[in-house]
Image (cartoon, rainbow, N blue to C red):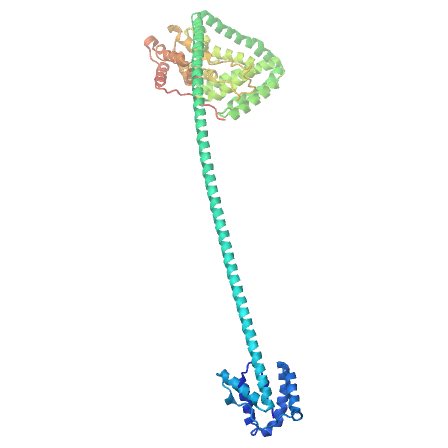
Length: 540
């Protein structure tokens, strides 16, 4: 008997295959007889490894022991007894397999019996394994299904949670956006309401201030007009008193002539007699004199020149020398008016501001300048006399050539006094402010205020017709160019009345015509049209 290794192959082989293999081995015994020894050795060698791998080594040893002791046990040993053949099994009919197994059991061949027992046990094991496998597969399948179900549920739960979170975020975002929108609308509404309230308050405040300012301006205007009228009446009264007292005006004029003589006696002659003092004063004179020619329409330049002149004057400690220098300054200023201002009237503004500042700082200079003004152009204080005599011409400010002894020409006389009149009028119109050195509104007073212009005009129109000449109309025209606008601002309606009188009735005296009269008529026409030209203010 030969046991093949295929009898104990792995569980993947069916019972029919094993029986078929057994039959095949019996039929091939005769053919492979010669190779039995070699094959048996190889099969036995392989059988040990296979049985160990399948865990059937103990069973094989048991079968081997039974077979070896079959004689002792009285078991039949018929080698010709056939094994189960392939035809005894059907791969498709299980009942046939059971029949074959039954047949093997009934056989007296122990090999068939063992085979049948083995096959039965193997079938049972196979069934158990398949059952276990199926149960395991079912368990695994159920576990996988459960896992997939849980995964699906978890996924669904997460998706649902994410959806809820997303929806919550969207809801909160919408709520936040809505809240911000409402807050923004509220803020804009409140801002708009506040803006409207502010505008309303500002409007009411502006209207209130405008009304207050209007009332204030109206009151100020009324007060100003009242003050102007009172001042005009007072000045007019003073002028009339002076006009009606010509001797008083003459006395005043003669006093200025006397004061001029005193300058010669008390200041000029003593210095001329003192050579050392004259030399020292000459040095200061040469430093001061060029300053008047350096004047421009610049306030900055004017301030600088004013400081330089005051610095130079402060260096003079001698009383006599100081008086001499101030007299020289007064002469230089009037000379500048006679020459430059007569040709270029607008240049009178910086010269007038410099002069007014020096008059404020040095009261003695004010007295010296008034002497120069009224002795060179006596019409400024309302004095006039006949010019037919030598004395009359001297009093009326005519100049005589020292070499020839001839009087200057009338054109030169008119031009020179025109420059003085313009310069005098500009000083009248100036107002004191912080641009002047040493400015102190509490203590400073204008030495030649605008009221002097009223006196000048009022006395001109009250002069006796016999004393009125062309020079009177010329200097009044020059005054008009320089001071008309400020004169009207100061005296209002009264000023316009006086100007109308000067330019109409006064110019028609004697039914004569001259350049000075015609010019005043033209200025009157411009004034009636609202045209009032004046000199420009200085640049900063």
